[in-house]
Image (tube, rainbow, N blue to C red; front, side):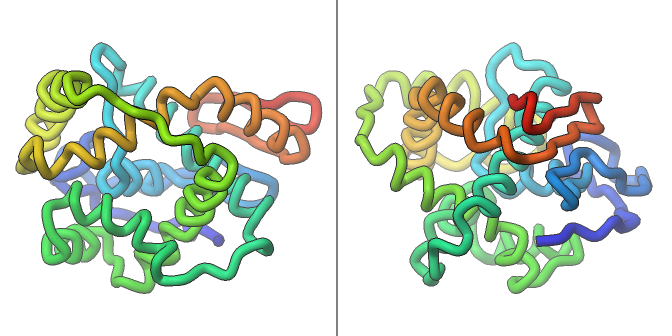
Length: 220
């Protein structure tokens, strides 16, 4: 999937700039000959179930989100020919997005802010869809998260982020499956990083936003 460099009006929903700000979009990273833009990072923060960790700086959060988008793109190119995606595959990503935004109606309103329609949204998430499908195949072991940890995350991590972004917070009951999935993924980080590092050795990766470069001789 190619990303167009566009001029964006960044809205009040964006945590990076004020509502009235106008920025020229910039290239954040390059994976082989494909780009990831600053606006892609902003969209991912607003759409995906990504949470800023407690005491994590804004820069570190953006850096982590960009790394996630780089990983999505690498895995998409590595495995896309092995799958014929179905609507059920898309739902694995779409449902958490709808839960995070509150409803399908609120999601459509948010998409219009970014000048996106439903086909644009599906094209934006396709790399995440493939990544999640591959991840489920590679790391299918179920991890149990104690409910007390979910409650703690909801109160100490989720609620402050929603308040900072000016978004309506969902209830603990609504957010429990999403938080549980998020915490489960964090526990697989060690295996996941080793797996990704091996795959990424054959890709040319340039992290322009944070001035990092990688390739066959170096991967992150």
